[in-house]
Image 1 (cartoon, rainbow, N blue to C red):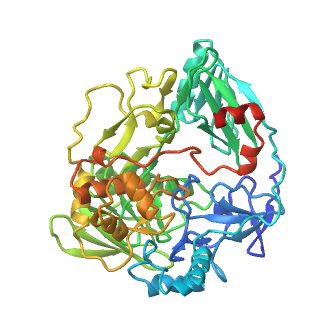
Image 2 (image 1 turned 60 degrees about the vertical axis):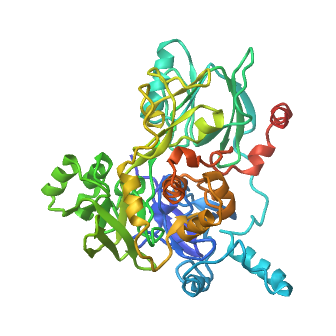
Length: 530
């Protein structure tokens, strides 16, 4: 079979080539990770971080549409792509001087008010800074999928191992489920209907009726929308690799294990030469398996398990257990890391060009929160999981969990006052001297010092601190900042994490195009208004 021709597109005005089916992130040339966007407040350099389409590290303007994820955008012939918000370019952004001139950050709560006669000018400056891109210049194209309504026997959200297994069990029971998944790749499950590239949310929240307990909205990136009604919903959205707080944790080259593993599967393999892998468990072992020749060291907040130690020993990779990751050195990209052995040990540094975070995985629990399912705090790994029975059912009738998002089923409730390894790690870390910006929320450039100031001023609780600082209000909707902020607030407020609460998980789970919502039929809109 003849090879398919390469795709030709333009990036920043220059003609580029891409292999068929490749994303923009995979198609941009050069070593390392491309810097395509700057942060909103300080215009710090950013690059891809998660590889799942959740973060703001690889936003571009594609064919006039802003805030498109380069890691999810499949290149086609004739595409025109521009960097997002750097001037004159993200690589050389003159507004990046703000990061240097304001080492302690901007007081966005009390600043820009005096003298009063300059308030108008301040506001114009703030608006210029606080955005990733401008609005589309032209109206978006008509949705490829016309709005429609589906009545299904059951809905499975997620087509990973857990979702597929759940769909197969339903088929075996004589039920034909509809499977929805965000993946761009086509997939099929015998005996089930499947729609790829779709994001599903409960809108409005679940309600009990004689015909159907759940109404869901599924939207696609091209503006398509459909409503689905079903008496049974199985949520299998999977899990993801968490962030970690340290100085310079937003620098290009800091990434999750999700992205590192994805990059290693590309035609060029892992694009960086010397990575520091953070973690001592099975996820770190998986990263070492994938990019072992590019791993310079393994650093763990706690102990390093035998699985990692065995793999590292075979590759002669040095191990640093019970070590604090203090800072990522470098501006345009990571050049080295600053470390210190826990318990007051000596400081030292290691050269590297990337930091791969593989220390803990967290559930995609947003849909469980939105559905009203009761959740339970798990001190290890430090996250909320839905309460499920041994057969996967939640506290909402007709709603079940499958796969890693469901967490441990049944059993006694964990001790909320337990102090897991990561909590102890952060207690030690926050006492360290600081000399640069510690980014607590990468989407909104919220600093750790702003969380500390909020608590000192009497603003306590996760939801209150979110409203006061803006943490968790960005495009990732708190996936990467909220879990660490919850542990930090627990330390700063001196109370257990469950008492600190969590941010409200409002629909949609991911940013949704307004034309998809506008295309919905009147009957469903009436339900939403009610």
